[in-house]
Image 1 (cartoon, one colour):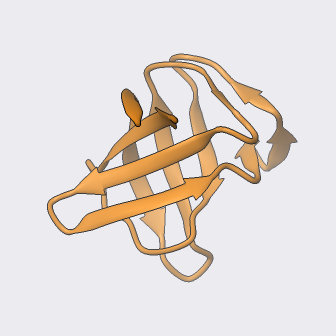
Image 2 (cartoon, one colour):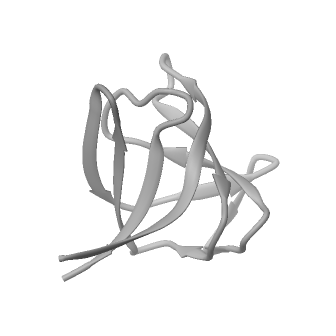
Length: 84
């Protein structure tokens, strides 16, 4: 498995399980990601992303997106794109 850093968690909304991800690379719906931090290790497939409450399929470097996550993450956790 290869992993490439693509961003960091900027904020996490626990009640709705949405993380704000500040991207340093492109991310697409369907990509597999890994979110890691001192107390976080979460692997999932990107099922939906939003910018300004609008659903998008592709997010580019420099954008901040809302990402539905399958567990708790924390600010400054690192987001990796993983390939088999």
